[in-house]
Image (cartoon, rainbow, N blue to C red):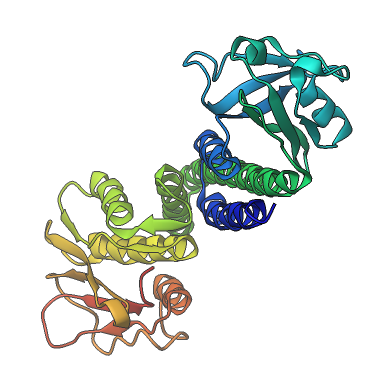
Length: 383
């Protein structure tokens, strides 16, 4: 007896250390089956047992599937089935939620010995329930062919493993549901952006029809400008839903695609777009796209009255200082006394540009020490 007490104490201390280490693994686990396999290995080690298995309940067949295990024949894991009825030790633990100890299976009158265990010569077994908020996942079972005794203290050790596994299952399922919800939300956002683009294209078409039906040149020009701006918003939404992620937009790909569309409508001009591969928040993408569209469209109209020329859209990543956006040309330049900050004197286009600049963090700056028109704007730090 004096010798058994130190041995028992050493066993319990080792079990606690194993359980503590497994708790860290359970918190970090991202996949269930590898975690279950690790649980069976460590549980068998902590119980000094030859066999351990994790059993997943299959409600349609009302049975338990061996989904992970140690000590069993190579073809048992993933295929072997054990009854989930009350006459099965594991089934009893599953249906009642109570742990089961059977130290003499050959003499057991409460339960039958499942075929898998009989084929492996199992003499004793201990079962505990694996549960979570969604219900009972299955059973964790330790088995051995040797004589000996599983004790009540072993139940606490195994139940600790089962509880950690159940918590991990619950967390992984919650994460999976959250991921599915986020993916659905992104899909809906893409669909919304696509539909907005189509709806705006219809509005632009109506404006075009109305312009063609008017005999007033000023009305025609106003409707044409309105149509251009509606089409610009549609193009921005068209680019948004095509982006890999809607949370953060790659400014280089976004602006290159937008400039490509603008280039199609300005064959006499050369649009150059240079931007680093950095991300900006999605809520900045729309005002950024409209800002660039408005300035590039103005340059296409007014910068080179005698023919075509180069229009440049560039972004410099100042990192901590944010992004510096510039739209430049080498054309005839801005009118004498041009003041972008005087809203009462500014054209509708410049009022729109100033409004967008404020949304992006502004203010809008104009360089006057070089030929052509040079607009720049600093945007907050990239993500």
